[in-house]
Amino acid sequence: MIGEEFERLLARARTGDESAFAVLWRDLNPALLRYLSLAGESADEVASETWLTVVKGLADFRGDETAWRAWVFTTARRRAVDAGRQRTRSARAQWRDRSSSWVTPVEPDCADLVIESLSSAEAIQIVRRLPALQAEVVLLRVVVGLSVTEVAELVGRSPGAVRVAAHRGLQSLAKIMSEQGVTRSDSRALREVT
Image (cartoon, rainbow, N blue to C red; front, side, top):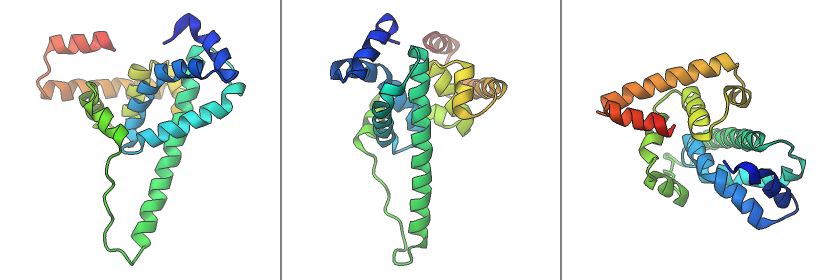
């Protein structure tokens, strides 16, 4: 998080100061890409669409840094849902296309290759093994650092449902990690990071 400089940076970004917006972007974009990696190959595309939407709505945004993070991730979630709907429509259209008997596989883009090479890539892969809601809640709570209330609003669930999903997700992750031979000291180090 940026901290005390946030309000000043936001004010400068609203006036079109690219360097101020770059600081805001650099602070949040890595976590945004990790969150969007749940969507698969379109993470970079969805992140780009998210930032375009954020830039367009920047003048209307009101709130502190925590509200900023929640707003950006809510926007990202909406763009990801839109992208998922688009993929579904495209898949249906390809299925109906009788002139083609097979679908060309989609190659990963550059951003996906970068994300896979990050040190947290294995962690993201493990999180992807969770049910969708649990994976999303764990990433929003642990990686992004949003509160239970903020995550509940973002995913359209009650705070209790978010707490249960986070608890179950973390229990499942602990089981997966133990099956992969992660020791207790490794687990403690992971908890300290989160």
